[in-house]
Length: 473
Image 1 (cartoon, one colour):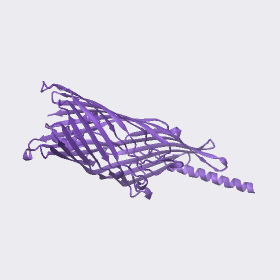
Image 2 (tube, rainbow, N blue to C red):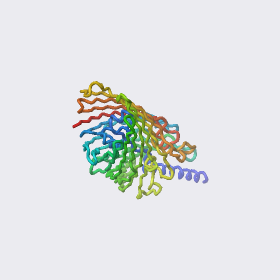
Image 3 (spheres, rainbow, N blue to C red):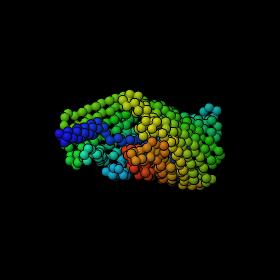
Image 4 (cartoon, helix red, strand yellow):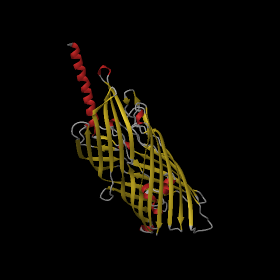
């Protein structure tokens, strides 16, 4: 009798555990966290390592420092196109099946603008107006991987979970930005940009997360065919609407030195969030879940200063920038979330804000530009130039340390990234300017927040190409 009772008790424990595992397998996806990538503007600026705050003498000044717009003397139209490749090489001690190279590549319109200067307006000062399209953030990422988990059951039995996961995040955020630059004195210019984040003005200003999972459970290595599930998850963020400003100033210390400063304001945007789950089980009827609710995203403020020096021969210019971004301000407000802990969470780690502080990031950039002009020829039909730069460009992270039973509470330390740039340009007959730039950016032992497992991180390599055209009228 005792033996029968013991067998019955073990069976209850066994099947209860399996039932819980099945429920988890069907009702939850493998959590993957991806935060947006910040996008720089313009092939010329990028070719100089992005050290452009104190130069800002082309149409992309509306992005880098609108105080530099007053340096533009002719009406012009510009367009910038970019191609990006991102490679991630993950390593994981507890889940070696995750290890491998993952990559995504895409191209997009990076910047477009029309500039019109008004010479000698108020008290003889220059006034410049421009209308700009700026790509600000992109969400592109793809991960295809296997995932296994094993749990101990009663009487030495073991239950295993096997998953094939396909994850894709895509989309972007861009702005339509009217800008104004005004010359206060012969040495000081200021500028203002109104950034309109509005899907009615910019189509497809949204992002989507698609996740597909195939799962099976096994007991002591024997696959339970009835446990098979196929889950399709789609999360769509659309109707993004918000407004912020960019303020800039440019001061000329003399013939050779310039100092620039820029401020991008913090703002909160409204987002329409939709979520679909379709769950096909090995037995029974398919399950379907749909949810729609409003979110608010608060994006962080950032500010920077720069200095530039033009050598006496007017051929070589060096520039240096430092910027700071307040990533602890990047917060998702989700008041209707059924999990009250997730109603206010970090936009970086997707954890409750109290669990995941974030240090501000400091970006340091240095760049150079050399013009091949002939001082004996005031007008050259072709004026080539070359550029180079380097930068330290960290990304925000939770900074959660490895512990015996998972990741500990984060200290907000950043992921370190570095990069080098090369660029070249050519001004043709003083009417058309063509610029190109290449960026190589890398980070080692980063992106621990992606899966949230101990001893799991990635080495990241990014290759970016920029091509821009400016037409002067």
